[in-house]
Structure formats: C-alpha cells, structure tokens
Amino acid sequence: MEIIEAYLTRNPCYQANVREEDSRYTAFQTEGPRGLMLHSVGCAQPKASVFLSGWDKPDYDRACVHAFIDGKTGTVYQTLPWSFRGWHCGGPANETHVGVELCESDAIRYLGANRFEIINQKTALADCARSYAAAVELFAFLCLRYDLDPMTAILSHKEGAAAGLASDHGDPEHYWSGLGTGHTMDGFRADVAAAMAEISPAALGQEAGPEPTDPAEPGAAGEALPFPDVPAEAWYADALRWAVEKRIVLPGDAPFRPDAPLTKAAAVVWLRRLWRSLGEP
Image 1 (cartoon, rainbow, N blue to C red):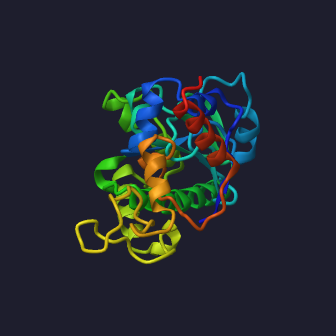
Image 2 (cartoon, one colour):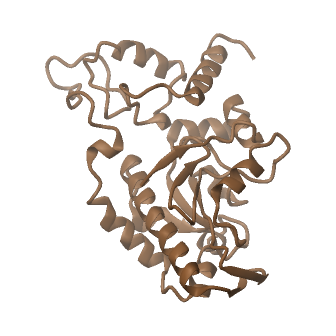
C-alpha cells in the first residue's frame, strides 16, 4: 500500500482543524479516531487527483474526507491528518470516525442515485478489486494504529445512515452490488481483521528505538507518554511531556514517529497550538 500525503490545506475543514474552531475539533484531535467509515464517491470517476484539485479550495465547504483511494492505481491519497475531524458523513460520526472514499470505475454510467449501468465489466471489476484491496490494507493499518476492533469500529456510509450516524446514502454497498462483486461490509470487516495479522510493526512507524519503559518499573523517566514509539527515558521525553501538557502535541497525534521527517502540516498545527498556549488568538 502506498500512502501519499496530499492534505487539502485550503479546504475550510482543514482550516477549522488548524484553528481548533470549537470543541468538536479539539476533542477529535485529543482522542483520535474511534471508528472508521468507508465511502465511495457516487460517480464514475476513478482518479483521486480530480477530487484533490476540486476539493482543495477555500470555497469548497461541503465536505472533506481523510483519504481517497484511486481506482486505477490503488494509491491512497491522505487528504487530512488522521487526527483531524472530517466532514465526510453529514452526521454524528464526523465526531468519531475517519472517512475514506473509494473512487469508482469510469467503466460504469450512472442512471440515478445508487443506480448505474456497466459499460465494460472487466475494467469495472478490476478497478473495484484494486480499490477494495487497498481499502482493506489501509483500514487494517488504521485499526492497528488506533487500537480499533475492525468488527465493531468499521462502518459504511450506508450503515452509518441506518444507525442515525450519517446522512442517507447507500455507499459503498451500491457500488459493489451493482457490479455483482459479492462484497459486503461483513466480508470487508473480516478481510481487514485477517490483514491486520500481516502488518509488521515497521509499517506502523514503531520500529525506532527500544520498547518504552513501564513508568512503574525502576529507572523509568517521569510520567508515561501517550506514544508507544517514544521510550520514557528518551532524551527529548521531558520536552514532549511539556508539549503534551500544554496541548501542543495531543494523544490523537500518535504515533509520534520521532525519527520521521517533520511534515509542513504537522509544523503548522503544532505552531498554531503553541501560539494559543501563549494566550494569543
């Protein structure tokens, strides 16, 4: 699985997270995601780049998801940090769930809401299989990263609507059933659970440094940190504890990945939080 960072920094949702506009955004950033929601785009457009260019605008205030999965390559384009509150489902699950969109094949033609005809079945099935496989791997990665049970934490937009957590949509089940793939959300959850066993710790960014020391054991340095990849005795641990206390770095930012390059997006978010911790607007 390839994840390309393509944050929609000009989208109003991204900006609301950077500003920590209200408690909904600070709560999501503090707690991190408690669930994952799978969507499909509802139009015959397999290229994620089309959505990236269309949604990364200051006046696109209708939606913002955490990622798109390209239907032609299976590449994951991450459009929000996983610890940001998204605008992906039109309901309460925005407060708790990461939202991911499957791009749909251009070998279909829509006839109405949730209805389409197949132009080229071979191509359509190949595009669907590619995005499905990438979604399984991505959701397995996120379940491991945020300690989520795939059997209870994963919903489709359609299931979210039935549970009163999302707007009235039928995706992605309408896409799968319309193509005759046999895919179901129960099957998807089972596939994610199986894939979790195949993901190495290195893929989660937790390979750097020794295992963190239990603060209750002799020799532990200070209080425990909310980051499994940061040893309690790390030379920067006290500074990181201070940043956590001041809400500059939040538990929802886990894993911390101390040896990874600092992204521009993370720098902007942390500087904004530092500015606020100093009492500035």
